[in-house]
Length: 196
Image 1 (cartoon, rainbow, N blue to C red):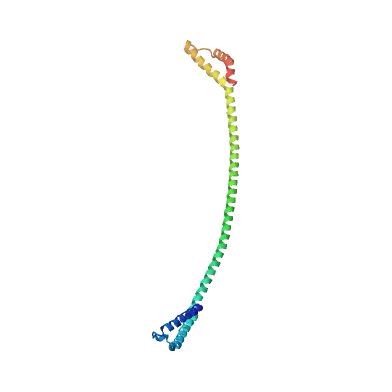
Image 2: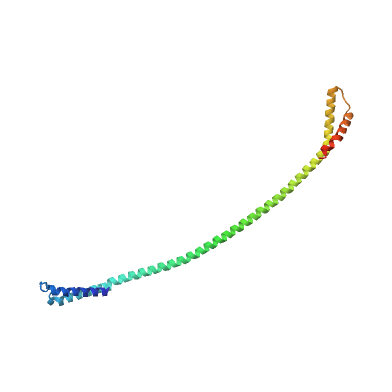
């Protein structure tokens, strides 16, 4: 900044000297050499006061503001670095939690599937046992029906035949003779129905 002011003053002095030689004949009083000392004095005094004001009051404030901004930027960068580090740590923790959660969910699902499969197998075995028991009961009932069915059929046949003969001839018939005929017929034809 000071160098810039110095070079500007030299440049303006050069222009001023050049104008002196051209304007000396025109009669401008500030370009006459007799006024140069006072002009140089006031020029030095003005620029000196300006230099002191700039160097003691304005430049320190600008410098302090620049340092403050620099320190704030540095603090912001450091805070951002810390935040990035903590964010990376949190992200890693989050990934670990997700991985653990997936493993736990997989294990829970596996355990639940095994438990359900075990329950289904137990219920299936129980149901199979119940069905086998029911089938055996039904087979026993069928066997009993097969044994008792010929007697019942013979009795029904005897009763129906006696009623039929009574209606046909109008007289009572001996049940023993009808029973002998039904027994004889059931022995001839009955075995083919009951052995199956």
